[in-house]
Amino acid sequence: MTTYPVRIGIQLQPQHADYGMIREALAEAEEIGADVAFNWDHFYPLYGEPEGKHFECWTMLAAWAEQTSRIEIGALVTCNSYRNPELVADMARTVDHISDGRLILGIGSGWFEKDYLEYGYDFGTAGGRLNDLGDALPRIESRLGKLNPAPTRKIPVLIGGGGERKTLKLVAAHGDIWHSFVDLDLFKHKSEVLDNWCKEINRDPSEVERSIAVGESRPEETADGYVAAGATLFTIGVGGPKYDLSLLREWVSWRDSR
Image 1 (cartoon, rainbow, N blue to C red):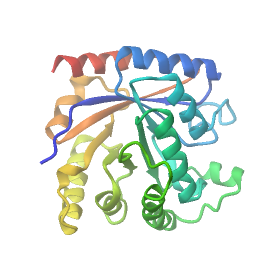
Image 2 (spheres, helix red, strand yellow; image 1 turned 90 degrees about the vertical axis):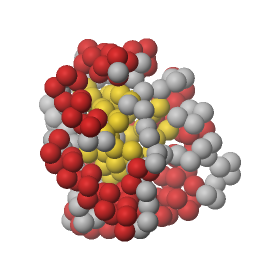
Image 3 (cartoon, rainbow, N blue to C red; image 1 turned 60 degrees about the vertical axis):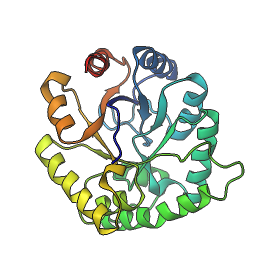
Image 4 (tube, rainbow, N blue to C red; image 1 turned 135 degrees about the vertical axis):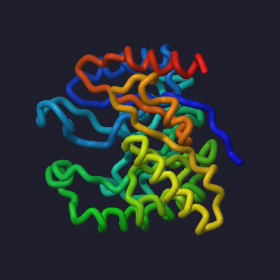
């Protein structure tokens, strides 16, 4: 049975801020002791001024790889629709090397319609986008196995979402980390559904780490329940222009006191 240490992540949402503010927030997050720093893969802000400042995901991750030395980095999550799967694999392998093996490849099927319409992608349907993700994941795996040089390690694949018929089935087949955005009771239910999909393909469910977005909750409010339910990666989201990392400090302190 695989066991995982409790880890704390921070999602530095790349919106409403000059890049220097993001750079400073990342340095502070690493100094505080966060285990993982995520951004997200969108082209416009998700809240606040809809036409506000915003930066692209993967070029930023390459910069983060050079800026940092300890913290893992990744997207929460890459939108599968925006790039050819083979290109995603090559980008991930490259950032993996730049970071000396600290990349998490977060990926999902996509949902933010404005991104699609403004950048010329076919939005289609939720089911169609999930089918595309299902087609892409084996292609990404295949390309990662062909690249020269190869990745520095087996790059962990994080899949975000909670759909019980398609998404969690994909997590069971391809994911190393499952990321969820739900409350504790629903997390327990969906984690059990994931376990059952793993068993269908004869995979040990403990091989999939469980990750949860904790929003603005404090550790004393939610942490113990999620830990008891199997979650080990807890991620706080923070947006610009001022990246307030006080809640991150609380979660890191809680992690260190266990």
